Length: 226
Image (cartoon, rainbow, N blue to C red):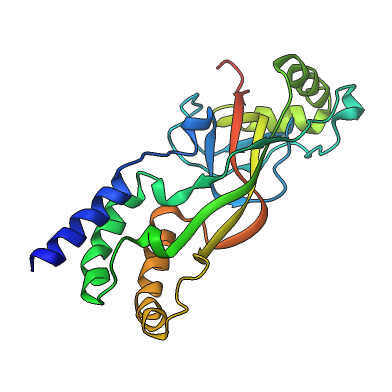
């Protein structure tokens, strides 16, 4: 009993020992779920009150025609800047859910912590950004288009955001290399893996794999009068 309790406490400490919040920690707002086709410089809206708060995850809907190539506005396209991998197992929102799995984990006779067996991370992460002045030039260019002006006017009470920067990466969920080679360990992991995936999906709404996904963005509030 003491051994099981110690294992549970060790798991909780391992999960809770570090804190990572990939949105505000990056000076960005989290995009949930991550997606492709979110372009720096382009204008999107969210059905919400306009806000500069980065804490609340959100989704984006296109407002004006997206422009992946900014050179038409006389602005250089963003250059990729590599960023460190982001370990999603350290996300504060997962702590409660993973602690809730600890009893099942121990009951199966698995020692250590979930992070000893699994990787759940954003890797090959790059930041794409433009300067404030470049963003303003692009915005003015898009706002000269009648359709774009009309769209902004129709959403004048909602959150309208221009994208100043995006964080793009590959989402990876997998057993760590060498883990599960032992048939007994592999069988035990097979029993708990559905619960692990369900906890991740329910808590973070990310999914389990995907390449070139935009997972956070730096917004410039463009709602008229804000």
